[in-house]
Length: 151
Image (cartoon, rainbow, N blue to C red; front, side, top):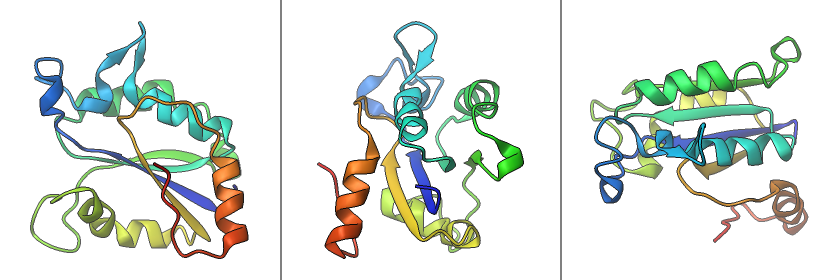
């Protein structure tokens, strides 16, 4: 999956998890001790050999940014061009903050395109599941589909 860019959506407020999200984004909520919810999706990425990852943030992202910077940037081989990088909302396409998940991707279309990926895997940064993305990816490529959605 070296020619694939992972885009993790991690900007949600997580109203249903309040008060856990009073001071942090939903993906930064502690889970299982020292972990955060986003660690599940990042672990799935690394275990699937997806080593080019953007994380799109917005809502109360400080603790999430710090957690990713301190815990994940050393996992990838930066000297080989691998990265896990946080993209704060930049309002590049319009003057509004993200108006939903599709808009978050759209607002970052220039950053995504600058990596020139052959494929883009858009993932939720606040779901808890274990998945190796390779099988889904292989089936997507074999099908010739423009888009594949895992449900």
